[in-house]
Amino acid sequence: MNRNEQKILVFFAGLWSAIEVSLGTILSLSKIPFRGLLLASIGCFFIVSFRYIVDKPRVSIYLASIVAVVKLIFSLGAGGFNSAVAIFLEGLIAEIIFSVLKANLISSSLVGGGVVLYPFFHSLVTQTLIFGVDIFRIYNKIIGEIQLLFGKTSKFTIFELIIIFALIYFLVGCVVGLLSFYFAKKVVKPILEPKTDNESG
Amino acid sequence: MNRDKLKVVFLLSLLIVGFILNNIIVFLFLNLLLLVVFPANERQNLAYLRKPKFLLSITLISVLPLLLSYWNENNFIETLVLVSKVLLRALFVLQMMSILYNRINKDRIVRYFDKIFPHFQENLELTIETMTKLKQNLIENKSLIFTNAFWKKLVFHPKATLKNLIARAWTVYLANRND
Image 1: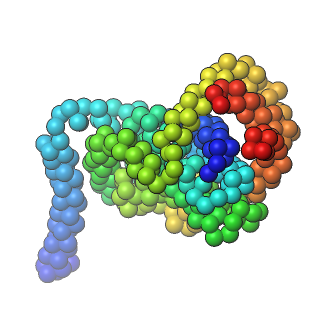
Image 2: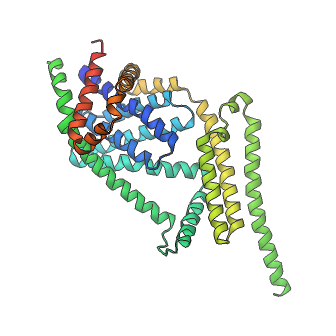
């Protein structure tokens, strides 16, 4: 990685970290639903944009590792550790997809799908780990009882709902990935590139 | 019901009650063990029970199913046992996770990444510096960002707004670099 690429890496890492540490902490504490989707979408934008500008192996995981460590340092408690692991794994997912398909429209869309879907699975795994498999029986009960209360007979079980939600997350992620690629090409690269060209020349 | 059938029903009931009690006792025992195994100074900072976020989720998890079950007057005891088991497990796992989290050595993680990625520590320090400056700039210009006009522009003209934001952040970043 040359000096200009390092400069862009620090810029992206700094901006992403600033959002994660400020907005991420507020969202995390407020327990707003779909906060993972929003933060993963922002992360996806930075990962795709950075990979589009600096298309070199391991750069996505490098960027995510820096942000994950910053999150680990500036967060309090086990919640911060949880988020740091999520950021690192999002970078890993992106790295795997970009390594196989290179940085293009299709891979960016798949990266979006993978990165945005990840927080959903992360929360499923965390809840299973913390509360045990019994938590799904409780959710199933809640869904069943709510259906009974409102006289509905859709009979959706928790596992069917998980699959539906996962599909929605993936599709939203694909759109986020496409938009990230578009903005990286039309907005981010023209701003960052002239400076890098001048300095490298 | 004849005597033999009654015996079988009695035995099965005892088995179920025993299984439930066993689960609860095991989790209670594990929580007690946790208090004994780890020293007080390690336990002091983590008491998950004091965290509002944890209290809120635990209230939702425990109250909602019981309320709904009571509403429909079925399976109340079963739900009560289920929720108790889940909460005891959560208490144990979260305390355990907090203790382990407190033992994480951040410097060791940075040193490990430094071996994998070139100039990791240097870039990490620069990132923290950049992040602080960008956050400072955001605080100074918060009157520009937290307006309806800004959010309207972001929704109706996302490309132009994003371009403006990235260009601004890039300028702030370059202005604060020493090279």
